[in-house]
Image: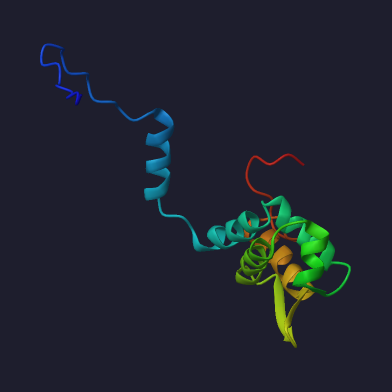
Length: 137
């Protein structure tokens, strides 16, 4: 037996859903011009917002490591470790090189130092710069 669904034409139509206040704020925020310097800082912070990437960074702080070593240390699959390394490379915090069939990664300490200095300058926290208006002493 085949049942066919017919719309119930006797029921009133529901009013269309209106966007939530959070959705409206999000839309407005995406339209507002965002300064490039703050976007650059945000990129690094978003990259480091993932716990697994931080675990990889902590391991690489001890020295170079192959993807196999990172897999053992972090406990993720090879594609996931490679994906996280690609994000760290894109942010300029890690570099990789081929050693035979292995890919070896290392932290770029100079990149971390440059980022820390850049972030302090952009946020007005660098030594000798005036503190932002309204900041506590």
